[in-house]
Image 1 (spheres, rainbow, N blue to C red):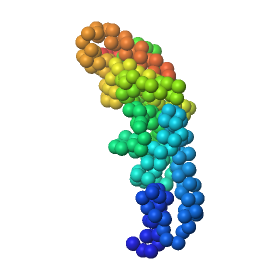
Image 2: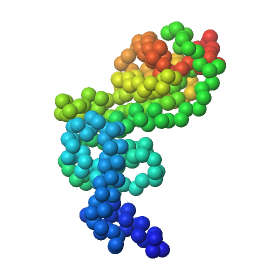
Image 3: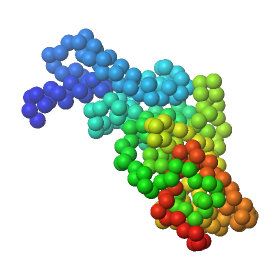
Image 4: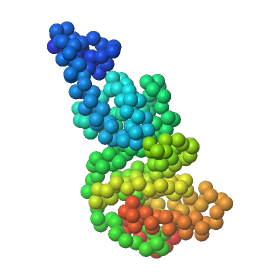
Length: 259
């Protein structure tokens, strides 16, 4: 390591964790304090903007301490400030010893708050308009192939993260299922799902099967329900999501015969 490289390493190590690393020789502590404050405050501002609910629940002091631990312990692979929230989410997923007491839902709440930014920045290849119809009637869905819009996430949490707030920080663990997707107008929308709908939407990842096939497979996992009831439930649910822009219908796979 050259002298310059050694100086840079000592400089950045002190910026990230001044309690563990002394400043490089020849630099006044007052000047280093100014550098430290500027760098960390910019980092803190980037994180705070993306996680307002978690920040409000933890309070300014606890949230700042948590962000500081991320700042000096996390490895960053991008110089872009927009990538900082993703690094904070990753940090919370694998944190073993937090500097402050944290609610059990901390990592999942942070992931829920970050997902909107993630989907807003995701690159979507230009859709083939010939493969999708704008409006399809309920009964026409049965023998079609439907797909979730390209930019989406199916999320399963152990806590009702969408209900948490500063005024409602208490929680009762409960399985929570959400669909988050981006519309062609670049709006990010959230839809709360029940467990059966979540299971059905997961099955849509297999693109070669028709809605009828998916609903028949779903009915096999719900033996207490009659097949017609499952089919009616599935058609109504998928049609509603189609009208909301969460699902597209493939015109190229229509058949007038059952699978």
